Image 1: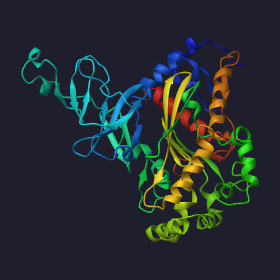
Image 2 (image 1 turned 60 degrees about the horizontal axis):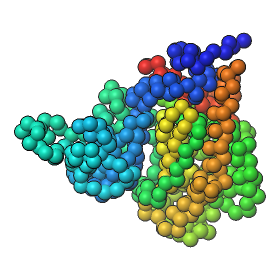
Image 3 (image 1 turned 90 degrees about the vertical axis):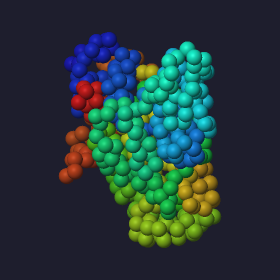
Image 4 (image 1 turned 90 degrees about the horizontal axis):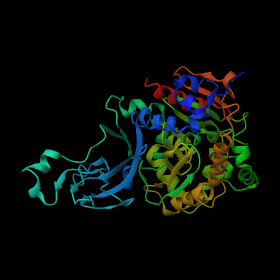
Length: 433
């Protein structure tokens, strides 16, 4: 029998004692000391998604983001390149950018008036006679993460210079990101349609790729889709893709990246989806541009997921539905989720309007789906306060999981292959491996 032990004891245990192959200790979701370790061992030592290049299209455009709890600025600098800067004045440590987004020529610290260029260079200090000549040049500028790299517009940063290149880190996840990018005939995305934000009272790791909950948490939504005689999203979900008899799968891609894999299922219904698009305003023009750009066969594959790979990139990025999602840990029992609907480049306006309405219907603040997820996460966090038996089971499908030649682990759609994949990477990073 598993002996209960206190969270303070749990924080001192090796990571391998808290996460095993089919279960995890609930302290990894509830213990503030473990959360502090995560901010150091995970968010400072792996690639973290910062934002998309389309969010800062003009010189001087900036967005405030985080690496774990550390504030950063993503900015299009005066040389036209995207920079990631630590949002901390060199003097007394105040933030130099306070509003969430904007356009500026300089970042200004309101404490003592130090001023920085958009590439982070310190260009002026107040009452400069109090400093030695050449002081600004000697100080340099705002600190930067040691590594910043992009994959097709997706900007990542890492505070550890020893990490492998971003493309190696992403592995197969990069190929899955292409499904969102290449649903545009020119492979361009624009994150300029605002953001939905939610804060829930639960741990950041609860936001995962879970194919098991859908028929229960979102039962009413699925029922409405099954009654829908039209095509579109409803047609893509015919024959219950969340049934273990369906063609859908869960996949652990390695390094914590996981996938609810709808590709084979949706290719089986692609003709219905194309018929749906032809009936929508702008649909014929959209399909023609896709066929011209990629050829008919590849266009079908690109369109099959409708830009929704349902991909989780560890630790803070998800690409789901028509959105790019950032998960920001706040504390052990509080998480912020930012959901950015994506506008496709070079498609008819009507297509992007359709996609935005679909996003709002499931993921908006008054939608039928996303609020249910936040609610269930809070119920989980509440339940984990009961610690007589502190273990959480994640063994579903473990006995039938298949490992493919490339190392990918594959399960049925309701199997917890994805949760186990995320926890393996959690354990690796928490061990400092």
